[in-house]
Amino acid sequence: KLGSLTDAVEPFARLLSQTGRSVRLHCSIPMWSSPSDICLDLHDLHDLRSRILLFVHDLLESLRSAGIPASYRLAPSNSSLCFICALPTELSAPKVRSAAVEILQNANIHAREKVLLADLECGPALIIS
Image (spheres, rainbow, N blue to C red):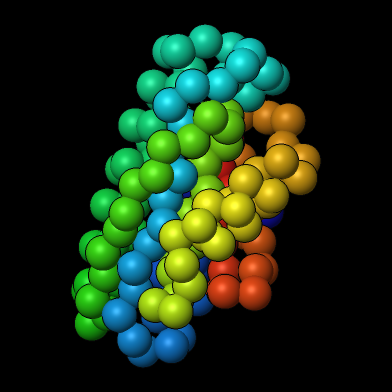
């Protein structure tokens, strides 16, 4: 667990910048979700989307200030959790989507505004509620 989103920017940026190569982030953004402990309604989803977009921009700024070229791609999701990972260039979009779906289905987060760091085959990822 990394605590809040603001606490997660620097550690995650450090992990991503260790390779010294450019970074392309895959970011799943919730568009719809059935009610859960985390998101009760569309206002909760909108709040989560807003927090995620601010986090992604802060993360990009941190990476770029460290001299790492960075970009991102948003992907709609029907989960009440967000998923952010760095995409290796050789990993296809369908593989990323299936990995994200599996991670989000198995994530055991039952509270709002939590950040978990996951270690995937393709590298570090964040799961955000």
